[in-house]
Image (cartoon, rainbow, N blue to C red):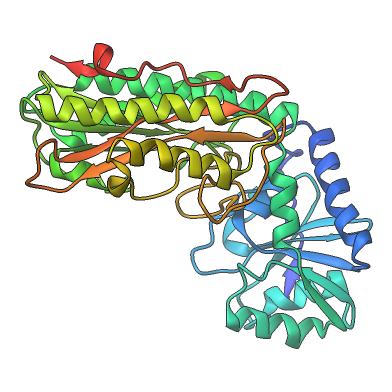
Length: 404
């Protein structure tokens, strides 16, 4: 028996599409914006390969496991290209068409992409996502007459949130607050970072399921750190047991259909020594000052310079380790970031209504010095025409976060 082994096929499995994170009209607006980019630069097609852009424009958040994925957008079509291992799920979870490529022959992915774009065309791609190998494959199979990096333009589009996105981000901030309270309730002398983080993660996942019963559930996580482990913002959880007087760092990250939100707070177990309290208060003061600076028309670099001066006046600037905040939307610790909207010295982006950004100063005092540890507070703000809207409700500071 001769088995036909095709390069690709359509497996539109099931009675119809599943519920997407947003209405179809939301994706139509996004694709219209992408096609504006296509028209502006006289492109024939755009090949999106990053998790964040494929999800943003199609609704489908892929799981790579070493295989390439794409969302190919032309003037008339939006087609996701996925691996056979995913069966019908990419079609059910995307707004447009889907083509499955097979593993039977190497580079079937690129054959499918070329079949959609055609060869010898003007192609937009994400230069910051294509590896050297995949860039070579694109050139070999698509043979573009001209290429263009559209990653910066897509990032600019993603930075301006729609009302529907802002509504989802607010829900995410609420879920993060739920996780924060679950973590606070689990804090006790002798409890481990791991067990406390599990309490926060489970509470958030259950809350997401309650608010979004038709969603996919994955990627929500907690970094709960104690003692020396608080010195870095992204330090993994350990099995260390809490001791009285420990500094703690609570970090809740609910993920809703690829949309990331965060809650980050400094806490202490039972008591705070005088040196730690003084540093904690300096960071709180910087946090509160930074909140007043998040206004339309202010640039990221200007805001950063002002907070730098504020901390320098208090002889604290040398303990700052990274920027003061960043954008929110489709992003994660393992994919995507709207790097053009971060509160750093080298970012000149001007804040506009519709952007969403955090204020999150952090001071890290080295081990062995009075007040050693990492201090960080984090609130999420929606930029409006007037004062920014703080969508984080979990309290910060010692009145609530010294936990017996």
